[in-house]
Length: 498
Image (cartoon, rainbow, N blue to C red):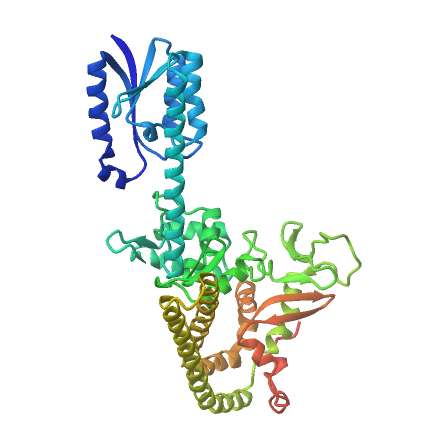
């Protein structure tokens, strides 16, 4: 009995419903082999696209057939179950012409081999071309459908980690188990206290796993944290769309995380070697980091790394306790006296009422603007239905108006995120500011470094002077109005004499 190989394939579940199921193809193939007196010695039963150049199962079939000269026959269901591209058609022709194989199609009872005439080969080429065209048409329609879905605000692909695809309604929903980890990832990265590696480890210990049950590694975590999907938007075909899915983080938190990822907000906590002031300072002359170094096994000095070349500098090496004293002025500048705190509280109280009035006015204007744009979109659709507008102009205006609507909705969302408790929170910050300098003086080096990271994101060392770039809200405390600055700040003599 002649030996044969059987190959059955589907590329989608929809095809199984159309009569191309793997079991149906296998049954028909085995019945065909029995009638032809063929013995099936191996079968490939797979789900893979016939358009991809890299078809694992199909290529295995080709190589297996070449290696086994005793196998002369290969059975497929129909032509498009075999291939829908010219690459694989040439592989089949190679088997026929060079290895003397016979190709069978069980559904149509057609045979192609070395003895086939030019008409048979011509029809075979036409069938492959038709299958190729059908595949291209399906692909084009699928792309158009996905683009239409994207324009409606629905992400036309697999949901990222933290979300899941609802197969019933086709929408993307929040994954209640993994969503909290995504929020944690953005908050911790935005804090500036973690590198991607340390954050990956923390999330793994907390319980976050990838879709394959593995740790979310550095590269995947970086991709996750840069994905706008998590604040409510998504990229499709090079364009940013406003999604209808529920955001997991605010745009503000997302932007803060991007700032840290870009290197503008890194702190990463305390160096593992015990150099508490590492990643705080940069050299004012060259912009290089000022890092700690241990001398004689016990003395810690900080100095410019001179990564861009050595330069002259006052006190090139500064002892850690001396450096802590140099930082004092930066802390003192945002430490207010009780009288100053009272003045600022009065200002906050006055601005509270002004803010709410301004907020109401701004929100009213935004809602009116949104209403106008939505009416224009509605009128545009009416013109389209009535045939009073060209398709090209319609698409152009539709994209323009939808873009405006995305910007307005984003502004509204940002305006709604304004802290309604800013007066109460401001008072707490003022209480902290009143105690900040005495607290710094009482703290050890580790806690001093934590205070310094709290109040500022960047310090420049110029010889024996340190200049700070303050974080919010401490930048406000540094730049108080003149009539408040003239009031005495915390007593600079609180620090004990050297």
